[in-house]
Length: 255
View 1: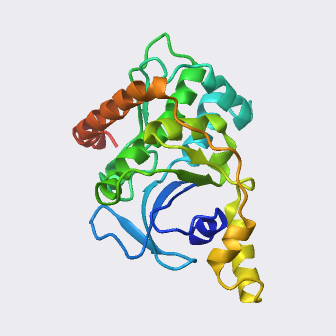
View 2 (view 1 turned 120 degrees about the vertical axis):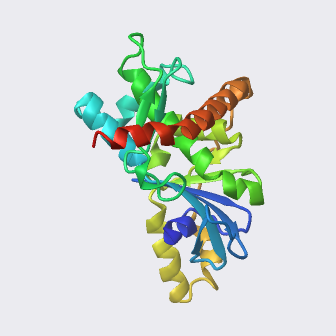
C-alpha cells in the first residue's frame, strides 16, 4: 500500500492518506515511526514513515452487506444512493464492522453486530449503518495516532472506497476535515508509474513524480450542521465498543 499512498500524491510529513479497498488504512506521514503498541508503521516509497491504523473489513463489509442483505441484486452505486436517503445515524442503528476481528485493538475475538435494530429499519438503514460503522471504527483505531500527531487537517482518499461520494462525505463529517479524492481512484497504478518514471530518470525522485502525476477532484467538506450529530455517534460507538468484550466472551461459548 505504500505505492498507493505515493500515487495519491501524499508525500509531505503530516499529511494523511486513506486507502480504502477490502480494508481501510489511514496513514499519517512522519519523518520517523510512532512508537506505541496500538500503532503500526510502514516505510514509504517516497521516504520517511507512515503511522497507520486499519479496519480490516471495510470494502469487505460493503461486499458482505451487498451479498447478505441484497443478494447482489443492485450495484454499489445504487446501494450507496439508497443509503443516502437515510439520515446520518440511520435512525438509531449502529454497525460494528468487525467481521474478521481486529488486527490490534480488541483482537481477533472482536465480532460484528447491528445494534439498535427495530421494525422501523429497512435495507437502506442497514446499508448506511454499515458505511458509517466502518468510519466510526477507524475513528477509534486511529485515535492513538491522533493522540500523538493531532487530528487530520485534510485526508486524501483513494482506491475503491473513493468512488462513493456518500462514503467520502461520512469520512469528512466524522473526522471533521475536508476529504479529497484523486481523479484516478486506483492510486497504486499512478504510484507504480511514479516509481517507473523516477527510475528511468524522468523525475529526480518519487515525490516530484507524484506531484506531477496526481490530479484531484474537488474536496468534500464536512457539514457544520451535522457536527453535533456525528460527535454523538462517535461517542456512542466508543461506549458500545467498550462493552463488546463481555458480549463477545459470552458469544464464544456458543461457537
